[in-house]
Image 1 (cartoon, rainbow, N blue to C red):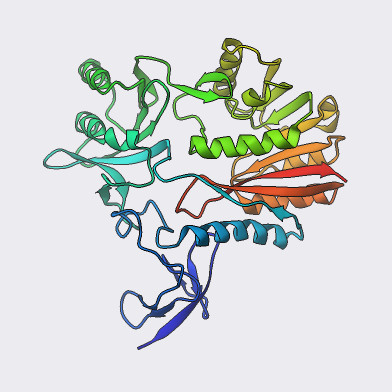
Image 2 (image 1 turned 90 degrees about the vertical axis):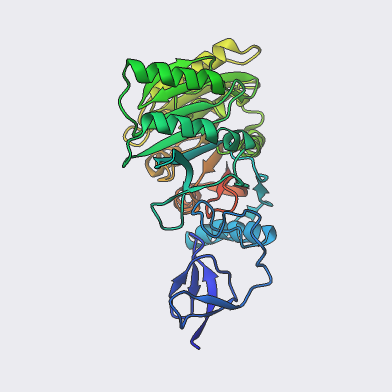
Length: 400
């Protein structure tokens, strides 16, 4: 028998042994028998648990259900710590906030026709096979209960060899559904789809980027405002995680009267903060800012909100444009915001609430700020993507 010991997990949750070989769904200190075609666990970790989902062994949607909640929380926090340490940045790491089971409010399903009908679910591990997931413990039950409706859509709109992508998002007024890679719309198909939508009580159905019908605006609540997002537009994975991020951001910028929100999207932070401050929201997608502006105008009791369409990667806000603001909120995509961070570092801004979904690029940008007179007071990790390797965070930067 050939054995090996797992030394650590990578930031993608792959186990690494003493020789540098990688393995899936293992934990540090576990001993594996690697003499066969598939490694077998000889000595499990004390942190290994039974997966709460019956689909875990076959489904590719989760990677850490075999680990205890305490282990995952500590490991994700350590991913943030290691990212910062690699850049020579130290700070207080607050206790991670983890979203509960069955709280994911958006999912992208794969869907295929079969001889007997259709199947809608997720791909298997490292596989193109679509698996049925009726007992998924990750998704909001509203999404699971709608799978039968998605099967009807698949039968109507998928070719026998093609695969649909069905993105569904919960909203206050019903599911917001986007179907991609489907047959082109014609009159007969449009009537059939509208019938399914009406019976399913979807709020909106969009087919290959073309609206089929909207029974009611699919609304998301950002503070006291109600927002109807563009179809498929960015939305935090869980409302629980979103609230944790907003709470941390609000704590950082408290007392500021003029705030600029960079990479604002449709107003995740802009609109809650507008209860106490004037906000200038900057975003590259005009549709998202139009949704934000409409939500602000329809809400009551909010301070002034202005918007600006701008590609912050190619044309970041410069120090002279930042001088009228007392605080910055920035929430870039996974690539981070190096160019914009360099401009903020040269400005007179006193407070920065830095939201990130990538600890590596966050640490890179944090180093730029630290080298230019900012102190990272604390970081709040947030785990919206339960049982995955992803972790989000909010960093609190102040001038030294």
